[in-house]
Image (tube, rainbow, N blue to C red; front, side):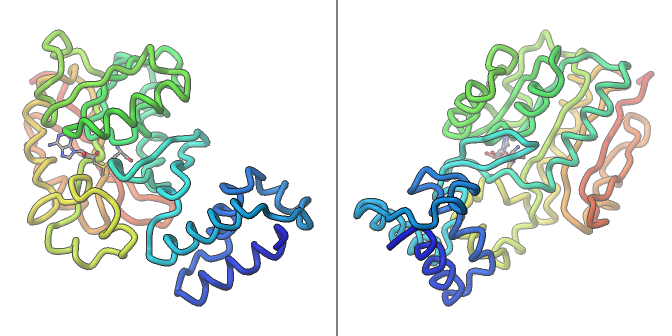
Length: 287
Ligand SMILES: C[S@@+](CC[C@H](N)C(=O)[O-])C[C@H]1O[C@@H](n2cnc3c(N)ncnc32)[C@H](O)[C@@H]1O
């Protein structure tokens, strides 16, 4: 079988098993086993696959047909134009989360806050590492409760050449941060689990069966961890500093409502599809 034929066979195999993204998935998996990039696949249609490549490709197609996400099968995902390694220990970074990174960069570039960021629930490190890469002076402290996730974040910091400005801490919310950061942090990015517990069973099988539930379940209304983090976030942020919380559609009003008016000013942002996606809570200047 040649490259062109393999692409066609893979596409049909996945389509017949109900995989909507069969075209792109077959191409990405074929690219993985042959080492050819997108253009390489187009230009090398006649190249014959070796026996080993054919076997690897069939195995990956079978796993994809079972619902395993492509990012886990190939071990990587692009985010903010950068390459991230992913494993089943971490959530696959979502394009929706790029809004948080863009907003954080906008706030940092205003020049009113310290170039000191905390990324809580760092997972693969997608947010923290993108920020460190795109804002050269920035120092980022990352926290995750999962040691396995932090191992992936460490590799990604190396991979993207920012390990020197990315510090990793294991712990619950902000409990493991050094005390010398109190009152100094310019901005906290938090993409903590925000899916209401009872919605987890209705998630797509790719997500529900393969991604870590520790990264998804946000308690009864999805906002448990955001409620819990507020006092410590208030303590670590400098006056006028910002806490950025990713949310799901329909959680905007409820998230604004958890912010005590005397200490926080909240603002809701929508993503490109006009869905509620982000709340920026700014610490009052005089508390
Ligand atoms: C939704 S994922 C976000 C991952 C990554 N920041 C991203 O945007 O792709 C949430 C992350 O929060 C971590 N987490 C869950 N509970 C936590 C807690 N109490 N303290 C710190 N991290 C927590 C999970 O291990 C997971 O890596």
